[in-house]
Length: 278
Image (cartoon, rainbow, N blue to C red; front, top):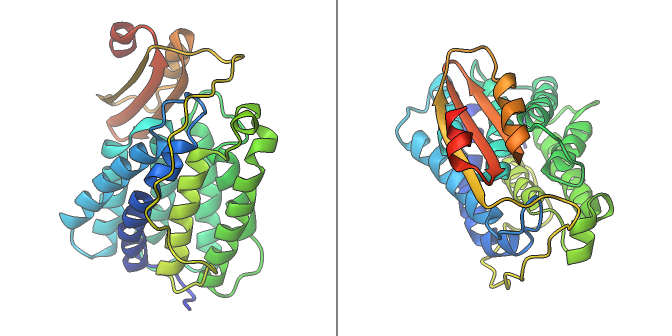
């Protein structure tokens, strides 16, 4: 057990998360019905984490270098709506360990910041998604925790409980008989983080699944678009709120993250050319 979360534990968690997400990829892809039933959430999360691991492989083990690698790798490598949101969550934990080990109070603040960044990333936050799961985990991380490992275990367990409730919040999930795919991936990551800190989440890491990818079950009330557009944008603007609004006018699933001159943009739209020229 550990009273702190340090850069080494975060690094181990990222590496373990990649292995665990690869094992769970088929199950996560099979559950992907929102915002678009394109059965790629697990694949997108794996690709996002592969980029983080690659960045870590190129970095030293010093805390500032680990933090920079996690931030840059997740920003540049983020894929899909859930990958963009996961990048924001990882950013919060990277910030927490950059200056040295984080105690329980700092970890609680990191969870709170992760939730804020995750909700801020998307133009139209929806409950019953990865957002609900990270918010529940953040709530569990608050309060009196003397041991960070126990704190992370509590957060992971509450996240799993929140994941089980997502069909109650999202009709498309209930209709398909699944839980939120992005939330599934986040639980995998949070459990890996708890294990990396020495916690016992009460179950082993995921094993490779042969889950069947079901035919798309779409929410008829929501718009569907022909293309998923995602790109990196260099801009010195302090925020890209105007771009978010412009993208929202031509599509949905809008997510924009980044800063310090580099941004990751994601949108579902029928007009690819317009989306990249705004």
